[in-house]
Length: 164
Image (tube, rainbow, N blue to C red; front, side, top):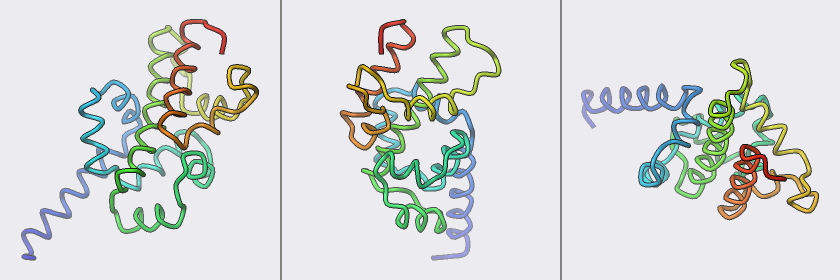
């Protein structure tokens, strides 16, 4: 590899890190088309994005990893090496980020308070037992695609005022 191509690679990594370090990335993922999200999953999400999510949600990274079914050692190694997650890992991360974006969008569209912190609210809501889940917590469903879909539907019911 030539010095020019190494420099291009480093610049590309920095640019990718900047894009994924923005707090609004979650709402952008929620609003993105399905095709765009599929492409993002196939390209791989930077492992470092999990640190952005844990910071926004104010939860320990171990808790987030456990909730979405990721292996800590693997993710931490990839983050240190500035690598992207594999397709399965990326799908799980996009799933939780999309849910976070959905919560933020829900508040914006409902005319909620300006200082409302959707990320922290979502973290607390995921840990709350819900009657619609037979008293189980939404977090228990976040490690599968079907579970994330179920939780997303319940969150949408929050906006419509349906019982969740």
